[in-house]
Image (cartoon, rainbow, N blue to C red; front, side, top):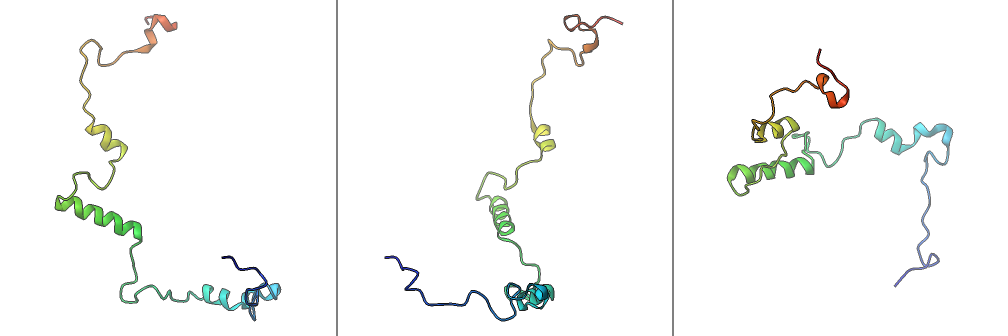
Length: 112
């Protein structure tokens, strides 16, 4: 069931004082004035101005579940340095601690 354009009610494409109507006086557009004046957002509680984003709420919830023991996977991924520090690499006694590539004869190096 689709509606043809002819069946739709006629609505104005613009409003009085719109920047599209008078581009030279765009600052007088009521919507631009409200945005520039820093009109308070109706969704923000004035007593609690810092409302966490949905992502922050999800992160906090995940952290709370982990701390409560409901989940075994930590909510944050470790940083590269933390991941490398946690990496358990066995030492191979066949290799020296530090190999000097300057005397590698295979690549054209020579003893100094």
